[in-house]
Image (tube, rainbow, N blue to C red; front, side, top):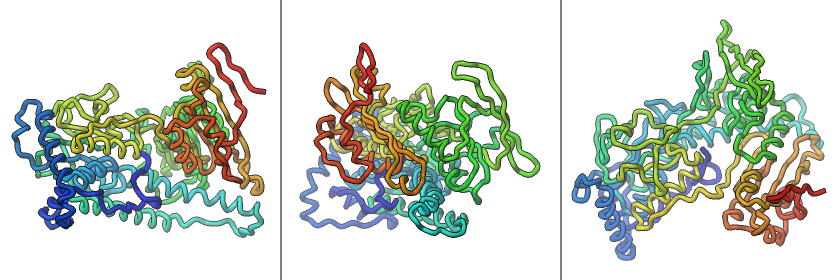
Length: 556
């Protein structure tokens, strides 16, 4: 998942959400581990309407969520109890308690950077073993190229720079421990009761955490996802992304199985650190589901950066030798439509299975509580994140809707408005910008060219590929691709894509524009910032391709 809701340097800067009078009173009467917050009489008077609304909503929720089991008149330990203290669960809990004055509890397992059935930690996958440490690894891996580029600008680097890996890992782990503590403080400061241990549903209103059993009018499941390892002979010798972020030394060689976000990001990281990287993927190009032009361009850049690409390939066997090294056997199809395969063997230090993640639903008691699951093993929810059991809700990766941290945060905000804010809110999953922190980066929002043609028929495509200004002097051969997809009949920009340096930063701004329904004419009227790569998005005037329902016309 991607990090959201945290300050620019990975530090949660807010001490809490605006509070109702109920929130203040709950904090003031809570156990000593909770923060005591005092409000003036004037503040409490001003917030009284919000308090009455929150209490009314909770009472109404009891009637609608009771499933005929007497929940309307039943007393509960909590208004909301959350299983899982990742980004989504923490956001929902903080807002429910801090803004709406709900009595909220949350459970999470003890901290460990490598997740298991007994360990996890407040902050969840993104903060502790996903987006944040991954991005720190990305930063560390970029300096090798930066040192080389500097020489093109006249810097005399001298001897080959060396990396003190142990020093970097020590600082990385210290940062994760700090962030884990930050999340604990955020919960505490919002008046949320933290219960350490693995949560398990007992029934529609009951959760067991270790030796303690709690009841709640509403239960939220926000347990995220776990890494998936494909089954083949010797697959137990694979490591997953959790392990890759804890390696004690930079490997000399590695096989990475997979063609999605995680696979190409770690491929770029290890290649940047000087590792010989072999990327194994089943399709003819990585990043299935992305714009086809983006996929093709990115694949070319990956090869340019030294990755050994193995398309149309699958793992067959993995063996460990007496020296501890691994012998990887794969099979490559001769073509995308062919069943003929050729076997190849690679001797490497590590094999990383980066073949995606699956909803973390094991041993949660979901079936016993009557919660329906999807065919893919995720928790089934309606448009409001409510499960088949009316008092149980689910957000984030465990629902397998869109596995991004900012999406889980958005779903959490909608959830709290629905339950406590007297404002039924559906999470909006349209036009969500995202980035792949591979090398080079990829940023995207909206539709791919292929999706736009299918949806609108008449589409204009504007694309530009160029060598960034920095690379013209440094000698770096890397190039950038920028692309706009426009629905011709409305002039609306329905897709925006970029491959190259700073794609994530640039795409956040373009994401706002696309979300607001920007037209190509409006982009054309915008003055660019010069010299910058970003200005290309407002200076592309002539369509590269004019795609029409009856025919496709390629501009000369």
